[in-house]
Length: 326
Image 1 (tube, rainbow, N blue to C red):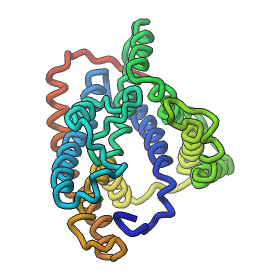
Image 2 (image 1 turned 90 degrees about the vertical axis):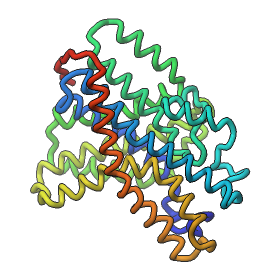
Image 3 (image 1 turned 60 degrees about the vertical axis):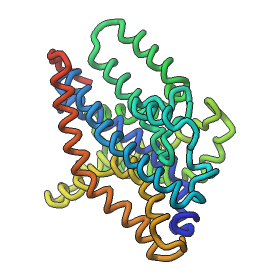
């Protein structure tokens, strides 16, 4: 209501479900690149470091600049609002830079940028997965346990959601599904996701970890897992998409991480520099269209930073390559 007068409010209930989908897809993609694109722990580590910080650093800068201006230009959208974390700003930015903002559910997201919470989970899952597949010594298991302990129970209890993506990738490599089975998995999984706002309340009182709901997220993850298997199965019975369309899809998909970390401060920015009436279509165009355009413009800069960070990381890491098979 504050930003677009409630435009598209119907999809608001899917916000957390989308993060769950993001976790499962992340596990799927990381399993794929670990097996097919990264020849050892050095390239794996360099890729994860560069991917996270190439977007996190610009997002932190963007959040700070917009919050600094916004508090002075439109304090009514900041001061005292539940979506603005104004206490301990230095600690929040330091914790977010090191991906520690959600360790033991500390909730140290930076300023207005609440979506930053999930990066703690991602960073820990990248590290734990890397230890599991690249370290050959028995000592990797105590190390994995230690990192789960550092992250806290919520990061640990949601790890199976991310791991479902890894399992989905392994299943696509091993299973051959009939067309009917693929359709069944595709639509049943999709139905679970669509029904998420109805299913979440049924599970919201059953199991909590650090005051956070868990079971509904597991149900969502199961839905996207089944949907992925069905989608992959159906792809084997269909002609490939035209190469130009594949390229466009890949281009749009590549910007989604930037959109995830940039959208919240940008929405806030366009809400206080645009028309005062949140119900006006010009305001809605600015908030939604402006956010998408700025994200698209910033994406090439994050890619340049990613390459710089990756090369720097590879240069500093000791060279020793080992193949890995999931």
